[in-house]
Every structure is written in structure tokens, then in C-alpha cells.
Length: 268
Image (cartoon, rainbow, N blue to C red; front, top):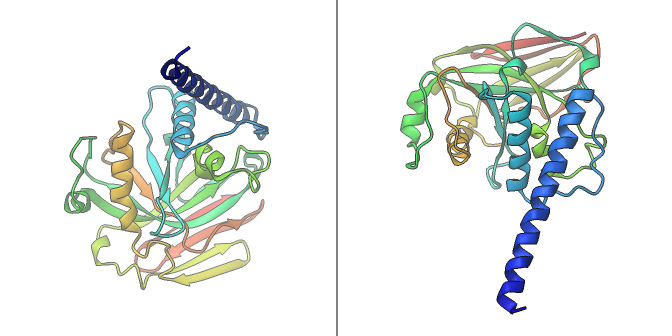
């Protein structure tokens, strides 16, 4: 066997092994969602963000065949690293005030966030949209509470790639009131008050990207790379302002951004 043929066979085998791991990961997450029993990932290894996004897409396609995301989550620890994204199906997009059963979740995490609702379609295209065009497509900003959940048995110790594959721990998105005058907001001075039961968290200008809108053009480009566009009515939520908080049954959770709006969810 020539060196060239040997190299080709190695590449083919590697690709086959990679697809096998993606199929295994997809099955584990599908089974976890359907049975409501967290997945033990074991020795199934995701090697790249590309693998994680492939699993995301496969899980979404099997759980909601033919559907498009109604919202997206985008975020990251700072603007020094590449953000990550996950689709949110229509059934997991809830209007405030909402109620959610604690028994339906494994994690019960909550985050106070700002979401951008589109007023115009942004279909996928080869030429990137200008920031001006994306600004014009945003109709309003909304206060949101992300419910963070996991389908992973040991989510704290599991790799970041597995969490990304698991829709970046998204469980649902509660959408509250907002404003169409969003371009007048100074996000670096924006205050937030987040109440979880009898606890309160307050912050000012605390978003990891400074101005959360910076994540919207990235998300538009990310969706286009995956052959998807955004549509009028879609919401892009942009990450926590006070970090991840853990709620419990009986808690009323309220996120309030003065000058913008608020959202509330009751954990039953």
C-alpha cells in the first residue's frame, strides 16, 4: 500500500469515527430529553465546536421536524473569545408572566437577560449584512429570563463542547416587556434588579460584551453559516447580567431593567 493511499484511508476512517461519535451523542441527548433521565456521556467524545453544532442541529431536527427556531441564545464570557449559540424552539418560548414546574427541570437555573426581537427578515446570504442593516431589522429590546437546564448527568464536570451540544444548557426563555427605543439605551450604564424568591441581585453595566447588541450581528452570521436565516419575530437573547442563579420550587423570579421592562416566572 502506498503512503498516499494509506493517508486517504486514515482520513476516511477518522471521518467515519467522527460521525459515529456525533450519532452517539445525538442519541444520548434525544434519549435524555424523551425519558427525562440525564445522559451519561461516558467515553463519547466531541472534538470540536463543529461537532457540537452538528449534534445541536441533529437533535433539533428530530425533536421538531421541519420547524425553525423561534429564538436564539448567543453569548460568551467576554468579547475576547468567540461567542456560542443555540436555537430555541417555539414551544420553549414563553410569555411573561409564566409558570414552570420544578419537576420538569434537572437544573433550575435562571438568568436575567436582554433579548432583541427582529421586525424584518434576515435571510441567509453569502454577503454579510452590515451592522446598519441589522440595526434597522431590530424592532425592540425585551427583558427576558432564561431557564437553564441540562440533559447531562454530570453537567459541571462535562466538557464545554457537550454543554454546547446540549443547546448551551437552555431550557426555555421567558419574554417580558420592552421598548422600541432601544438605540437610546446606554447599556454601559444600564441597571438590572434580579429577584429569585427572597434573594435580590443588582448590577449596573454588567453585560460581558458591554453592549449586548454586539452579539446580534455575530448570531446573524452564525445562522447564515449553518444555512439558516432569521425572521421577523425571532428573538436573540444575549446572556446573563448577574450570572447563573439557582431557583427552587415556590420561587417567583423577576428580572427588571429600569427604562426597558421586566419579566416574571413562577417556579411551581
